[in-house]
Image (tube, rainbow, N blue to C red; front, top):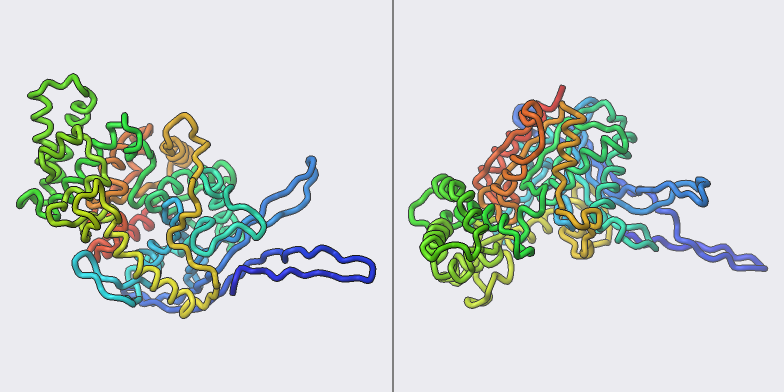
Length: 493
């Protein structure tokens, strides 16, 4: 099936009526499946395809009806015969990412088989049953925002209204409301699960669903969290916060690659975390540091990151993350991964200022693309000639006009959601080797939430020896699946 709608026209002997595009309709396909999950056998219905979103149209205050505005691709999994189960709405990040990573890496009933850092499998890769699927405890709805996956603005319209913070939140909230209403799930426990930018989306959605629709959710799971973009912002040259908060991640990656001698991950991270506050104070002093203080700081940062003192000194004690990944393994003519620092690959240039590509992204893009494009057609029976956009560049520039003149920070929205709904529970998952959303930056944001102690007790933390897509690491995938299942159970009344 393609997204091309053939125009129709009516001809009379007196006039030719202008052809108009056919009104888009949902093109969902339903299939039946079975999964062995532990001691249970789950019979479930999978539904995949595109749902048409519509908006109310008014002309001079007069209601003109509902007008189609977007076609959103989703895949839902619903266990048969259990109508009151929890349902988890999940999405990845970007902005510009489809949900394929969570779908086939962690949550869904089928998962990609690709190997791991240092032991990658060759093409064409494979698929296997996911016995640890979250479907064992919750129905699932995987969502692709507009311009990702098969999601598109309707024919004849521009997608830009969806390519920004508020448009994105509004469209996903509307989709969740629509799915919940059509499936009679208003009295089911509901959870939001986001990864990366999807954590910012999830926090904002929890508040938006409450204020717009009166829909209170039971849980929000934040995987590779970033709620305040200023915590990882290197573009603002005066923002020393990111340099300090990245330090423990640099230490973890340096330890993994043997740049800190025999220092273990645990000791490397602990030492870097213990220095973060002092590091921030050092950076804040700027040129007021004495030569002795500066030399001591250079030596300490070099020892924690595995970089040379000369490099740290020339960088003015401020290690930008893309440069770190290019510098750490330069002596081996390799670069370290950003999404997952355990990965490494050959550098295009041994003298480049920073790496030319992320070897961890290179490692996972192919397996997930092959797996999904096979799975959606051969097993879910959905056909669409559009390319499935894993990560779309078309969403850029992404609009943050709602935050003009202030940091991009949804902490207030999460605080508001938790104050409004004191039963709301939050799960935060961190990967030590995640160079995109470093764990200590996420911890810092959570630590500064303006919440009373009784609500702060609703937040739980989970740490893994993995990267951004932490489920790529098999022991982490198994443990994280268990942790998320336990979280769903704790969220269920």
